[in-house]
Image 1 (tube, helix red, strand yellow):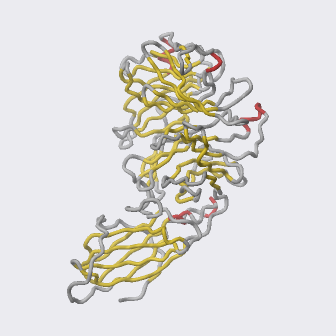
Image 2 (image 1 turned 90 degrees about the vertical axis):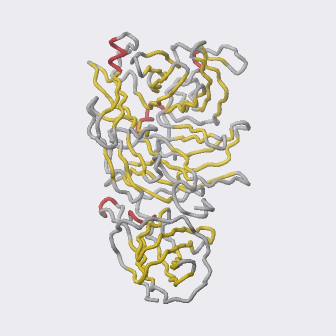
Image 3 (image 1 turned 120 degrees about the vertical axis):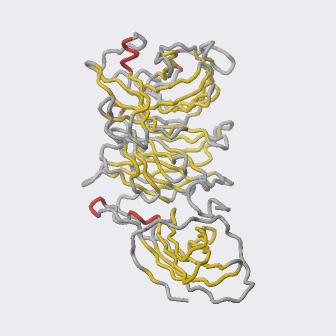
Amino acid sequence: MSSTRILLLALFACAPASKDKREKPLETEFTPPVLSAVVAVPTVLDAELFEAGYGIHQKGIRLAASGTAEVQLACTLSSDEAEVHTFSGAAAREWTLVVRGLLADSRYDCLARAFVGEAQATSIAFDFRTAARPNGAVTLSVDAVPGYESSAYTLLNTWVDADPFPNRRVVVVDPEGRVRWSWFLDNPSGGGIDFSLMADGEHFLVGGGTEYEPTVVDMAGEIVFKSPDPTIGFTYHHHAAELPDGGLLTLSKTVEGDHSGFAIVVISPVTGEVTWSWNSQTAVDRLQMIPDGSPDPYHSNSVSFVDDSEGSGAWVSLRHPSQVIRIDRDSGDVTHILGRGGDFRLLDANGGLLPDDAWFSGQHDPEFDFPKVLVHDNGVLRVPEQSSVMELELDLDALTATVLWTWDEPGWFEPVFGDADRLPNGSVLVTRGACWDGCVAYNLDDERPSNYVEVEPISGEVVWRLDHQSYFGTYRAERVDGCDLFANTRYCPNP
């Protein structure tokens, strides 16, 4: 067996992986192939972006054998034997593997084993240590109720304006609030953005926010696709999502005379071409939307394609009028207006009529599971000001919206950012994003931190809370199952 070689190198394509991780007993005698290992660090970003340790959450490992063999690799966190990153390679003579989702400034002990047929040929042990956290890294803490268990990662975006460079990034954190993946945004304007894992489980979708193009990023942090400058409107705005057919759904900001409008745009991630669009000027021309005379009468912040009882609809959240409108995707007509001054009557759980001021206001990112819709209500028009989450059940024929559930906490008011997602276990993940200069008019503390809470809806109990340890803004967050991202037995027992 040769000695371990430790070198820095660029990663190259790996051999096909095998999911077979069975123990294989020694049965026959043969000349064992010699196995060697090389630990590689992924491409490093420029130091001036204070992200010189960009690859701290992943290591590249090249394994080479003197003869054809299968290989198994296990890298264990030295301080926690429950965390084992496992990989396997099909029959070959060399393999390039990337261990992802590692903790910063941590030692990992690895064991690679080669097999010929059913017999173990040889093995090699080696270790490595990940780089220290870079300057400006996000620090979070978790508080959970006794007995709380979760294996899900949380995807979130963070930013803070700092000299000499703004610090804007997207990160993946584990249930203990420890960063497992991070990507630095190269556009200082990209704050209020979407960040999600794409359907293939190999790429992230980042973008939509203030002037940030919907961008597809792979696990190594390389940009695979960046949307071209919008052909409809002048900048992207707040939303980016992957559609079931692979198209990218986003919003753009348009100019309509003396005020701004918005457009819904679907972009092909293959060609960059617009495959479907709708412009708010269409509704203005049809007298279905009437601007109020302000420079930004709508301020769209999210869009969802929903197959509802009326057919195929596009539901758009408009922050400034505190409304969510439905657009028929076939005719282009605005068919329903949900919210203040709209078409629907708001009812309590017993069918009683609620006043117009009981509607959501300044809302963000409604999540549809028709006929239900979960709304992050910023509460900018409430007296006194109060943010909350509400779940409604819609009847498009009777034009009613019944309040099924609400939740808030005393003193919680965030006027500009936020999100609410229903989780597979029935709980609700609430993103409570702090703002700074945008909150001047509300007399809020610019130094207060953002946080994320998981709420059990029946009891209203907060069972998990993730807090920033210093001021960082945040816009939206989502949960991803532990087996969907990294081969880490700590959060995926059978990766």
